Amino acid sequence: MSPSSSTDRDASTPAQGLPIEPPQRSFVGDAVAVGVFSGIVFALGFSWLAARSTPFESFGDILMSTGILGGLIFGPAVGVVVAYQLQVRSAVYPVGSTAEFRARLTEVAPRLKLRIAAEEGTRMLVRPTRSAPLAGVLIKEDWAVIDLEPGQVRLTGGRALVKRIRRRLRLG
Image (cartoon, rainbow, N blue to C red; front, side, top):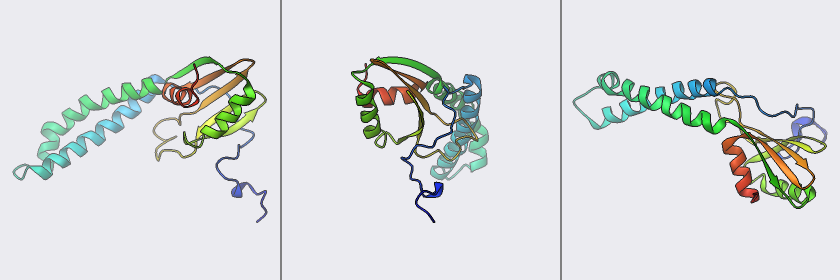
């Protein structure tokens, strides 16, 4: 196989041809998807743990009496918090030079477990190096668009990802 084959490309090599646009997310969709999934996991996990520590009650008894109620309380709360963190946010930060910022981003991206997926002029698409098992099925993957402007940089993406990038690159 030739070294220029796309299957030989490592995760740090940008893939060209991807659309570089800010992410579009649905707060309600993310909250419902994460809330339902985490509610089910909490109900089953709590019931299993309680059944293991209580010899007089079965898994089904605990699930029906406490697990489902706990899942109904816990699930929506987690769903709303995660959906808030995944909301699209755009922030502008001053930088010395765009070349210096690009060099710092290239150096720091592997430590943040991110890769530059696409690059067009002054616009970059940054994605996680690995996806969660249910990314794309349960919720959309979190990613960010970085616009390099003279003397400043605009980060657009999920709140949590923009905050992580800002902290690690010591912006603003």
